[in-house]
Length: 385
Image (cartoon, rainbow, N blue to C red; front, side):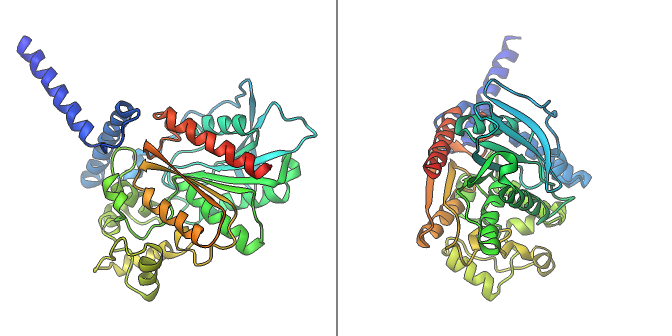
């Protein structure tokens, strides 16, 4: 019995050391929590692989879960109610400090989830509640439609329609039109960045600000340096490639490896320009190309999917970019910041040490979460003043 216990103890120690090695060394703050969630995600990734390889069970089915629907909850500071705007379900969070006759800043929030999962429930409900409380803003969380049932650009169009309607009818929601913001986390950050451009280009609408929390900003390659050095746990380059196939409704089982290797982008004058001008030759294009796949996913080079590849960013609204240092998406976020800065867009960049992808939404890194919330409050207050 003692030998069994000793063997079990040694096995646990070895397993813990292996788990710890999967997380980058620079993740120091809340490291134990990050190691645990990373290990759990590795188990899920393994189940995904088994399901796809042996049972033809597309990976996203493992992620297509919904948090329990929240009753319309109020806390001591914020009240929440469900509504429908532009045919899209939303949840509206209003600080109790707001009077019926007053107008407040407004923040539209687009949740993350790789374009194909999660919703306004769960931790996104908590984030929206906290965002409303800390900023004193009316927050509208958008429950957009998800891929693959609704592929690109359906979810994007849902968020755009809600944004445009709220902007045009701001008084109806007690929002000051001149203090309207859009924000998004991860894939929701992609929507916010794209909508920023859509509003400026098509409608000459300039928002009070845009808040991007570790956004997805390009879909042409998964070989930027951070895609390799920070690929672990909450978000790996492999999972990113799977999210992309789902967003464009092509089979992850059939095309995942091709997308991971960059064979969904063929050489052309446009793609060569993109890799040189916007990716700054940090990665090389694949020498091989799957022509059929590239046609199905042609929009990855378009600014409606990859806002980093927008040729004209000069008219964009004031932008705050919040990045996690230990995140596969970090480098494209930095490239986007540099691009906006070069074109004299009013843009700020914050990078949080020891933070992995998802730190803003999973409660694992409360220190960095609170720092990010504080930075958002400052940004909103600066714009409002």
